[in-house]
Image (cartoon, rainbow, N blue to C red):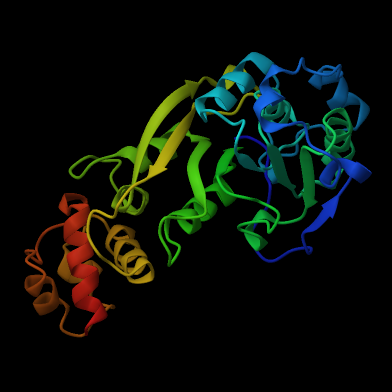
Length: 313
Protein backbone atom coordinates (compact mmCIF):
# COMPACT_ATOMS: atom_id res chain seq x y z
CA UNK A 1 0.00 0.00 0.00
CA UNK A 2 1.03 3.66 -0.25
CA UNK A 3 3.69 5.40 1.81
CA UNK A 4 3.52 5.33 5.60
CA UNK A 5 3.09 8.51 7.61
CA UNK A 6 3.41 6.86 11.00
CA UNK A 7 3.55 3.58 12.80
CA UNK A 8 2.54 2.27 16.20
CA UNK A 9 3.86 3.89 19.36
CA UNK A 10 4.60 7.55 20.04
CA UNK A 11 7.88 7.57 18.17
CA UNK A 12 9.81 10.82 17.64
CA UNK A 13 8.08 14.06 18.53
CA UNK A 14 6.36 15.61 15.53
CA UNK A 15 8.07 18.86 14.54
CA UNK A 16 7.61 21.40 11.72
CA UNK A 17 10.24 21.14 9.03
CA UNK A 18 11.58 22.63 5.94
CA UNK A 19 11.48 25.36 3.37
CA UNK A 20 12.07 28.26 5.74
CA UNK A 21 9.19 30.51 4.69
CA UNK A 22 7.11 27.57 3.52
CA UNK A 23 4.98 27.53 6.66
CA UNK A 24 4.96 31.29 7.30
CA UNK A 25 5.31 33.12 4.00
CA UNK A 26 2.48 34.88 2.23
CA UNK A 27 0.03 32.45 0.62
CA UNK A 28 -1.47 33.00 -2.79
CA UNK A 29 -5.02 34.39 -2.41
CA UNK A 30 -7.33 31.41 -2.03
CA UNK A 31 -9.62 32.34 -4.87
CA UNK A 32 -6.76 32.37 -7.38
CA UNK A 33 -4.74 29.36 -6.29
CA UNK A 34 -6.32 26.96 -8.74
CA UNK A 35 -5.55 29.32 -11.63
CA UNK A 36 -1.78 29.12 -11.14
CA UNK A 37 0.28 27.09 -13.57
CA UNK A 38 2.19 24.29 -11.91
CA UNK A 39 5.76 25.41 -11.08
CA UNK A 40 8.59 23.45 -12.72
CA UNK A 41 9.41 20.41 -10.61
CA UNK A 42 11.44 17.34 -11.59
CA UNK A 43 9.67 14.06 -12.42
CA UNK A 44 8.93 11.92 -9.39
CA UNK A 45 11.19 9.10 -10.56
CA UNK A 46 14.06 11.58 -10.67
CA UNK A 47 13.17 12.84 -7.19
CA UNK A 48 13.14 9.28 -5.83
CA UNK A 49 16.53 8.51 -7.41
CA UNK A 50 18.17 11.75 -6.31
CA UNK A 51 17.03 11.48 -2.69
CA UNK A 52 17.53 7.72 -2.34
CA UNK A 53 13.82 7.10 -1.79
CA UNK A 54 13.70 3.44 -2.74
CA UNK A 55 10.41 2.16 -1.25
CA UNK A 56 10.86 0.34 2.04
CA UNK A 57 8.70 -2.67 2.73
CA UNK A 58 8.97 -2.08 6.48
CA UNK A 59 7.21 1.27 6.01
CA UNK A 60 4.57 -0.13 3.67
CA UNK A 61 5.80 2.09 0.85
CA UNK A 62 4.35 1.72 -2.65
CA UNK A 63 4.57 5.04 -4.47
CA UNK A 64 1.89 6.39 -6.78
CA UNK A 65 3.90 8.16 -9.48
CA UNK A 66 1.26 8.83 -12.15
CA UNK A 67 0.50 12.54 -11.73
CA UNK A 68 -2.73 12.14 -13.70
CA UNK A 69 -3.97 9.73 -11.03
CA UNK A 70 -2.85 11.95 -8.17
CA UNK A 71 -4.67 14.91 -9.75
CA UNK A 72 -7.79 12.78 -10.09
CA UNK A 73 -7.64 11.84 -6.40
CA UNK A 74 -7.16 15.50 -5.45
CA UNK A 75 -10.19 16.48 -7.52
CA UNK A 76 -12.31 13.79 -5.85
CA UNK A 77 -11.87 15.73 -2.62
CA UNK A 78 -13.90 18.59 -4.09
CA UNK A 79 -13.13 22.31 -4.21
CA UNK A 80 -9.91 22.83 -2.27
CA UNK A 81 -9.51 26.56 -2.80
CA UNK A 82 -11.10 27.54 0.50
CA UNK A 83 -9.83 24.57 2.53
CA UNK A 84 -6.78 23.41 4.44
CA UNK A 85 -5.74 19.85 3.60
CA UNK A 86 -4.12 17.27 5.87
CA UNK A 87 -2.09 14.56 4.12
CA UNK A 88 -0.52 11.58 5.88
CA UNK A 89 2.56 9.88 4.46
CA UNK A 90 3.26 12.00 1.35
CA UNK A 91 6.51 10.21 0.46
CA UNK A 92 8.08 11.92 -2.58
CA UNK A 93 5.07 14.23 -2.82
CA UNK A 94 3.07 13.16 -5.87
CA UNK A 95 -0.31 13.71 -4.21
CA UNK A 96 1.05 16.77 -2.40
CA UNK A 97 1.81 18.41 -5.74
CA UNK A 98 -1.66 17.58 -6.99
CA UNK A 99 -3.35 19.08 -3.93
CA UNK A 100 -1.40 22.31 -4.37
CA UNK A 101 -2.05 22.40 -8.12
CA UNK A 102 -5.76 21.97 -7.44
CA UNK A 103 -5.65 25.12 -5.35
CA UNK A 104 -5.58 23.96 -1.73
CA UNK A 105 -5.38 26.99 0.55
CA UNK A 106 -2.78 25.18 2.60
CA UNK A 107 -1.45 21.61 2.78
CA UNK A 108 -0.07 20.16 6.01
CA UNK A 109 1.81 16.87 5.54
CA UNK A 110 2.98 14.43 8.21
CA UNK A 111 5.86 12.21 7.13
CA UNK A 112 7.77 9.71 9.27
CA UNK A 113 10.42 8.77 6.68
CA UNK A 114 13.20 11.34 7.10
CA UNK A 115 14.54 10.55 3.63
CA UNK A 116 11.43 12.18 2.10
CA UNK A 117 11.78 15.53 3.88
CA UNK A 118 14.22 17.15 1.36
CA UNK A 119 11.94 16.17 -1.54
CA UNK A 120 8.97 17.75 0.23
CA UNK A 121 11.00 20.87 0.99
CA UNK A 122 11.54 21.28 -2.75
CA UNK A 123 7.76 21.34 -3.22
CA UNK A 124 7.42 23.85 -0.38
CA UNK A 125 9.87 26.20 -2.08
CA UNK A 126 7.92 25.94 -5.31
CA UNK A 127 4.66 26.86 -3.51
CA UNK A 128 5.73 29.51 -0.95
CA UNK A 129 3.49 29.71 2.10
CA UNK A 130 1.26 26.84 1.04
CA UNK A 131 2.97 23.71 2.38
CA UNK A 132 3.82 22.86 6.00
CA UNK A 133 5.94 19.76 6.62
CA UNK A 134 5.72 17.90 9.93
CA UNK A 135 8.26 15.14 10.44
CA UNK A 136 7.05 12.50 12.85
CA UNK A 137 4.49 9.84 13.70
CA UNK A 138 0.98 10.46 12.41
CA UNK A 139 -0.43 8.40 15.28
CA UNK A 140 1.04 10.89 17.74
CA UNK A 141 -0.68 13.90 16.18
CA UNK A 142 -4.26 13.54 14.99
CA UNK A 143 -4.80 17.20 14.15
CA UNK A 144 -1.96 19.71 13.63
CA UNK A 145 -2.73 22.97 15.44
CA UNK A 146 -2.02 25.02 12.32
CA UNK A 147 -4.99 23.62 10.38
CA UNK A 148 -7.84 26.11 9.98
CA UNK A 149 -11.38 25.04 9.10
CA UNK A 150 -12.69 23.86 6.79
CA UNK A 151 -10.27 20.91 6.75
CA UNK A 152 -10.19 18.07 4.24
CA UNK A 153 -8.09 14.97 4.86
CA UNK A 154 -6.67 13.50 1.64
CA UNK A 155 -4.13 10.69 1.87
CA UNK A 156 -2.78 7.38 0.68
CA UNK A 157 -2.98 5.38 3.90
CA UNK A 158 -0.90 2.28 4.64
CA UNK A 159 -2.91 -0.48 6.27
CA UNK A 160 -0.85 -0.70 9.45
CA UNK A 161 -1.57 2.90 10.46
CA UNK A 162 -4.47 3.68 8.16
CA UNK A 163 -7.04 1.61 10.03
CA UNK A 164 -6.11 3.06 13.42
CA UNK A 165 -6.15 6.62 12.11
CA UNK A 166 -9.49 6.03 10.43
CA UNK A 167 -11.05 4.70 13.65
CA UNK A 168 -9.75 7.74 15.53
CA UNK A 169 -11.19 10.11 12.95
CA UNK A 170 -14.55 8.34 13.16
CA UNK A 171 -14.83 8.22 16.97
CA UNK A 172 -13.99 11.62 18.49
CA UNK A 173 -16.13 12.62 21.49
CA UNK A 174 -17.42 15.75 19.71
CA UNK A 175 -19.29 15.65 16.42
CA UNK A 176 -19.11 17.07 13.74
CA UNK A 177 -15.37 16.32 13.63
CA UNK A 178 -12.57 18.72 12.74
CA UNK A 179 -12.62 17.42 9.15
CA UNK A 180 -15.17 18.30 6.49
CA UNK A 181 -14.39 15.21 4.43
CA UNK A 182 -12.02 12.25 4.26
CA UNK A 183 -10.68 11.10 0.89
CA UNK A 184 -8.48 8.12 1.70
CA UNK A 185 -6.80 5.29 -0.15
CA UNK A 186 -6.85 1.83 1.40
CA UNK A 187 -6.37 -1.72 0.29
CA UNK A 188 -9.59 -2.50 -1.59
CA UNK A 189 -10.54 -5.15 0.96
CA UNK A 190 -10.44 -2.53 3.74
CA UNK A 191 -12.40 -0.04 1.62
CA UNK A 192 -15.10 -2.67 1.07
CA UNK A 193 -15.34 -3.23 4.82
CA UNK A 194 -15.93 0.46 5.39
CA UNK A 195 -18.92 0.64 3.01
CA UNK A 196 -20.39 -2.84 3.61
CA UNK A 197 -23.91 -3.36 4.96
CA UNK A 198 -25.27 -5.87 7.50
CA UNK A 199 -25.43 -9.45 6.26
CA UNK A 200 -22.43 -9.17 3.95
CA UNK A 201 -19.13 -10.92 4.50
CA UNK A 202 -17.28 -7.59 4.56
CA UNK A 203 -19.53 -6.02 7.21
CA UNK A 204 -17.62 -5.42 10.42
CA UNK A 205 -16.19 -2.97 12.93
CA UNK A 206 -15.13 -0.41 10.34
CA UNK A 207 -18.56 -0.55 8.69
CA UNK A 208 -20.38 0.29 11.91
CA UNK A 209 -18.02 3.06 13.01
CA UNK A 210 -18.00 4.64 9.55
CA UNK A 211 -21.74 4.49 8.96
CA UNK A 212 -22.86 5.48 12.46
CA UNK A 213 -22.49 9.20 11.77
CA UNK A 214 -21.06 9.52 8.28
CA UNK A 215 -21.70 8.51 4.68
CA UNK A 216 -18.81 6.51 3.15
CA UNK A 217 -18.55 5.47 -0.49
CA UNK A 218 -15.89 4.06 -2.79
CA UNK A 219 -15.10 6.67 -5.45
CA UNK A 220 -12.13 5.13 -7.26
CA UNK A 221 -10.27 1.84 -7.61
CA UNK A 222 -6.67 1.34 -8.68
CA UNK A 223 -4.86 -1.79 -9.90
CA UNK A 224 -1.52 -2.90 -8.44
CA UNK A 225 0.21 -1.70 -11.63
CA UNK A 226 -0.53 1.92 -10.66
CA UNK A 227 2.09 1.72 -7.89
CA UNK A 228 5.86 1.33 -7.69
CA UNK A 229 6.56 -1.39 -6.68
CA UNK A 230 3.20 -3.01 -7.43
CA UNK A 231 1.48 -4.32 -4.29
CA UNK A 232 -0.20 -7.72 -4.28
CA UNK A 233 -3.71 -6.29 -3.98
CA UNK A 234 -5.95 -3.69 -5.58
CA UNK A 235 -6.50 -0.36 -3.86
CA UNK A 236 -9.55 1.88 -3.53
CA UNK A 237 -10.27 5.47 -2.58
CA UNK A 238 -13.03 5.97 -0.02
CA UNK A 239 -14.73 9.31 0.55
CA UNK A 240 -16.42 9.92 3.89
CA UNK A 241 -18.77 12.84 4.59
CA UNK A 242 -19.95 13.44 8.19
CA UNK A 243 -23.70 13.36 8.84
CA UNK A 244 -26.02 13.42 11.83
CA UNK A 245 -25.63 10.23 13.93
CA UNK A 246 -27.97 7.39 13.01
CA UNK A 247 -28.62 7.00 16.74
CA UNK A 248 -27.14 8.28 20.03
CA UNK A 249 -24.19 6.38 21.51
CA UNK A 250 -20.98 6.94 23.39
CA UNK A 251 -18.15 6.59 20.82
CA UNK A 252 -15.81 4.67 23.09
CA UNK A 253 -18.50 2.26 24.27
CA UNK A 254 -19.71 1.69 20.71
CA UNK A 255 -16.15 1.03 19.58
CA UNK A 256 -15.67 -1.42 22.46
CA UNK A 257 -18.88 -3.30 21.66
CA UNK A 258 -18.28 -3.67 17.93
CA UNK A 259 -14.64 -4.66 18.49
CA UNK A 260 -15.73 -7.46 20.82
CA UNK A 261 -18.60 -8.57 18.59
CA UNK A 262 -16.56 -8.79 15.40
CA UNK A 263 -13.46 -10.20 17.02
CA UNK A 264 -15.41 -13.47 17.13
CA UNK A 265 -17.86 -12.75 14.34
CA UNK A 266 -18.98 -16.35 13.88
CA UNK A 267 -20.04 -16.68 17.51
CA UNK A 268 -23.43 -15.67 18.87
CA UNK A 269 -23.55 -12.32 20.65
CA UNK A 270 -24.08 -13.99 24.02
CA UNK A 271 -20.65 -15.61 23.58
CA UNK A 272 -18.69 -12.87 21.80
CA UNK A 273 -19.80 -10.16 24.26
CA UNK A 274 -19.65 -12.16 27.50
CA UNK A 275 -16.58 -10.31 28.75
CA UNK A 276 -18.42 -6.98 28.63
CA UNK A 277 -20.98 -7.82 31.35
CA UNK A 278 -21.66 -10.79 33.64
CA UNK A 279 -25.31 -10.96 32.57
CA UNK A 280 -24.69 -10.21 28.92
CA UNK A 281 -27.55 -12.32 27.58
CA UNK A 282 -30.10 -10.28 29.54
CA UNK A 283 -28.45 -7.02 28.50
CA UNK A 284 -28.62 -7.97 24.82
CA UNK A 285 -32.28 -8.91 25.18
CA UNK A 286 -33.07 -5.56 26.85
CA UNK A 287 -31.56 -3.87 23.78
CA UNK A 288 -34.19 -5.70 21.70
CA UNK A 289 -31.72 -8.10 20.13
CA UNK A 290 -31.81 -11.89 20.13
CA UNK A 291 -28.56 -12.94 21.90
CA UNK A 292 -28.30 -15.89 19.52
CA UNK A 293 -27.68 -13.56 16.58
CA UNK A 294 -24.21 -13.04 15.15
CA UNK A 295 -22.51 -9.65 14.80
CA UNK A 296 -22.71 -9.60 11.00
CA UNK A 297 -26.54 -9.48 11.19
CA UNK A 298 -26.75 -6.56 13.66
CA UNK A 299 -27.51 -3.11 12.24
CA UNK A 300 -25.75 0.12 13.20
CA UNK A 301 -28.83 1.27 15.13
CA UNK A 302 -28.95 -2.03 17.04
CA UNK A 303 -25.29 -1.72 17.99
CA UNK A 304 -26.05 1.78 19.31
CA UNK A 305 -28.88 0.39 21.43
CA UNK A 306 -26.60 -2.34 22.74
CA UNK A 307 -23.84 0.18 23.58
CA UNK A 308 -26.40 2.26 25.44
CA UNK A 309 -27.54 -0.70 27.51
CA UNK A 310 -23.98 -1.71 28.37
CA UNK A 311 -23.12 1.86 29.38
CA UNK A 312 -25.78 1.59 32.09
CA UNK A 313 -24.59 -1.76 33.45
